Length: 320
Image 1 (cartoon, rainbow, N blue to C red):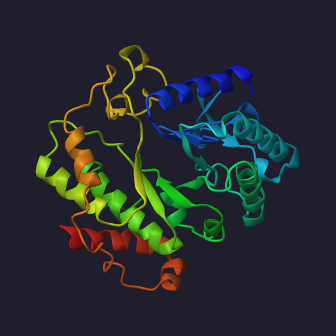
Image 2 (cartoon, one colour):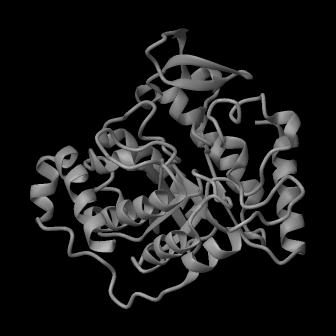
């Protein structure tokens, strides 16, 4: 890892600290704005139109992953790089917490023992320097369709961050608009908290919020999300890109992706954003909506694909 890159992050943290701001560091960060960003040695090395779209060496390609989980040399390399990052950033007054293993279970999917080795190594690097700082693990909603890898790990981290709402599970009905996205985040977050029995925060902001959104419906959906007892909410991106970046990845890969930030390129809050944030910060529901879950956990785990879709309809009936 280049020292200049580490220095650049430290300078950003310095500016945030001077402004009295706190932040979380995502490391290693894999899934950003709907695209997997991978180092060349983590890609399979050959193209396949059926493979996932990933960003490698400055270009978007369809590549299969290299199964680095079973390669001790790559595991050691990743741990060494992580150690370098932690050593450079730990103790900074602007650093509030860490988000590790960002969607790492998806590309490629590992075995249980492999995950535990890497997770415990990352945690050890952090805990040796600060045993009290919060460390969350980043997962996608796909882990609700196959929870077996995550279930044994939850006790080792402070909580889970659930993301992936740039796309919805197959068979889930409903247009991906701002209102439905807030309801989906509330539903998925509640389901994840029940399945994993652990603190969960959710990532939102993929649909954008503009003057075409129905204000009352947005407030209702935001208050629903606020009332579900989740640990927190993060936004997909803070600032929209400058226009000259519209034709560059990742913003050119999906319509509207250049307009989902909280702030416009001039760092001004966008229309409806303050209202959305206010509704998400509210806590007007004394009792989170959980009675839509009409089965026990073992039954859910027998057929997560079926129950994930079925319970979504039950949730909408309960909140609307």
